[in-house]
Amino acid sequence: MEEGKFELWAQVRTGTPQMKVDSEGLLRPSTWPEGGSLVYLGDVTQAILSSLGPHPPPEFIESPGFDEQRWTISVQSNELKILIRSESYWGFGLFARCYLNRIEIIGARNDAARIAFDIIASLGRDPWVTTFPFAFRRKTELSINEHQVNWTNLIDAGKFELAENIELIADRYRKLIGKVDKIGKEHLSGVDENITMAKQALHDRNAPAVSRALSRAERFLILANPKTRSDLDEQMIESDDEEIPFVDLTESE
Image (cartoon, rainbow, N blue to C red; front, side):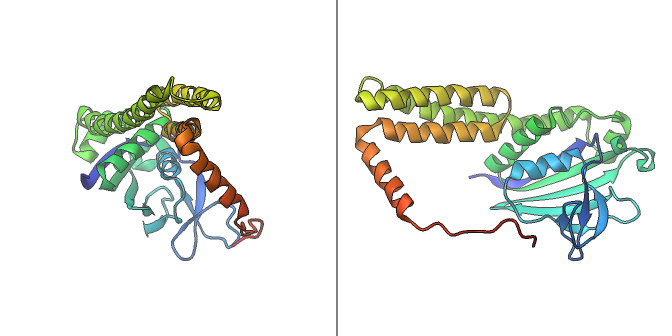
């Protein structure tokens, strides 16, 4: 699997959400009970963190000072590490649109591609389209076209991987048609429905929805096949018999 560093630059459009930096230099919600200094995260970084899924609180390598939108953070999710630098590139940072994010993704290319794909979907816009093109080019030392190529190369790789995953499930579905019992036919309908949902989610650039639809389709495939159905039923029975620990999420840390 190809691994490396992938550098992307993005135009910030809004400074929100407003959050806090705690005493240990970790990013916290604005309602953090132990206080902390103010930081403006921005729409791009918010999209990145949302795309990562569950992860420990990001750590500030450079904390914000007088300028609450100038900072550097590091965040880790499984084997993927991301460094994000927020700074102004025009007009002394008077407005949120005067800022950019330098994004360095360290890890497998497939993972980096998935993150780039999710960022675009979450933002709902092209991050290489800038408010002040000349200043953006001068700051990044890359043309707008070069930025677009860097983004789209990763996005296309992420889209191709998801499309391959959909086709693998679809191929298994086609091979089972005409080879299942009455119960299996009902479950095959669930497979077909979720393959359609996965394709639509891919069209909408919604990678998490693609993954959820494929996960459901995979389960329906197992249930449709009489040879694997009993194994899944046994696993479900064993799971029901296991004691589930109680976790109280109502208490603050």
